Each structure stands twice: as C-alpha cells, then as structure tokens.
Length: 232
Image 1 (cartoon, helix red, strand yellow):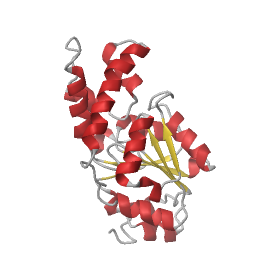
Image 2 (tube, helix red, strand yellow):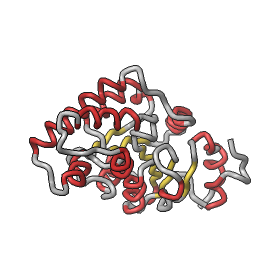
Image 3 (cartoon, one colour):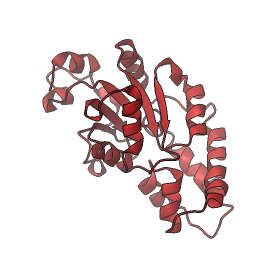
C-alpha cells in the first residue's frame, strides 16, 4: 500500500467518490486473452474478414456493434451481429467457466467499498448474458448494487453506459469514479464528467492519458488513507 504522503489521489487532490462505476473486462479480471481467442474462433467461420490482435486491442472496451462497425467499415445488420458476435459471446461464456479470477486489489476494493456503504455498479460494453455469467462466476452480487450493459446503447467512448449507471445509483456523474482499462472506456468516463482511474491491464500508460490517474493494479491505492484525507 502507498503511504498517506505518496497516495496519488491525495497528491492530486481528488476527492473520495460517492460511487464507483466498474468496467468489467480487463478491470475486474484479466480476461482479454479469452476475448481475443473467442473472436478468433468465431471469425474462423467468416474467412472473408481479418480480426488481428492489433484491431482487438484498438477496439477492446467497445460493444459488439461498435467493433463490427469498425471491422466491416459499415453498420452491421442484425443478422451479422447475431451470427458473428453471438457466436463469439457463446464461445467466450464457455471459456470463462473456472478460468477467471479477480485482478490484484479488486476484491479488496469491492469488499471495502461495500462495507463503507459506497454504491457500486458494473457499467460494461459486454452483452447482458456475459454480465450474468460474471455475476455467477465471481459472486459479484456480494458487492455490487447495479449492473448496466451498453449492449443496446451507443458504444464507448460515448458515456451513455456510465451516465446510466450513475443515474441508477442516484449519484451525480461528477461524484463518481470510473475504473477502466480500455482507451474507449477512459474516454467515455472523461466525456461523462467523471473522474477516471485507469489500470494498465490492456493498454500502456501512454495510451491512457485521459485518465485522472493511471496505476498498474488497484493494490497500489490505500483506500483508507484516501477516504480519510478530505482531499478535494
């Protein structure tokens, strides 16, 4: 843990949040490799398209409609979303069973914030069925109050999913902290007027410059010192 004098939130004068909005993939757990593997497996049936690792990193954090729009260079039809993304997500949900764990510091944050009565939400680009699978696999109902999927919303970097989560928790956006790993998600949080904490699970620091703070893991943050500092 960082000392009071070194805690980066204290140094930046960032106030302790009234609510925390969590991205899911790459933030709660490191499952990017499973997403990439499931995309590659799904696209094996569509050889006319090329799904590269570079494209995957660039679009990680977007919803499937947004990913396919960039890949196809046009809006996908409902049938294409169902056939390609639907198959990908089916494969992905099979892959996560028994294969995901919390990233360092995450479960401690979830548990501590719950004990302190700080409302928390998942605000993810993932389809609703994926969120349900995560809730069951990681027992997230022990900690979280609200689950919001951007499945039928504008894709990040649009802030719609974060704004919806803030509204569901009855907390003003400016009083929320967004925890993200993807460039699109960091941009979405910033666009929503929220403070953003980014972790380097998926992207290097230099790609996360819109965040208020970038850390390698949440274990670097002393929550008690931050809460008691009166920063901001």
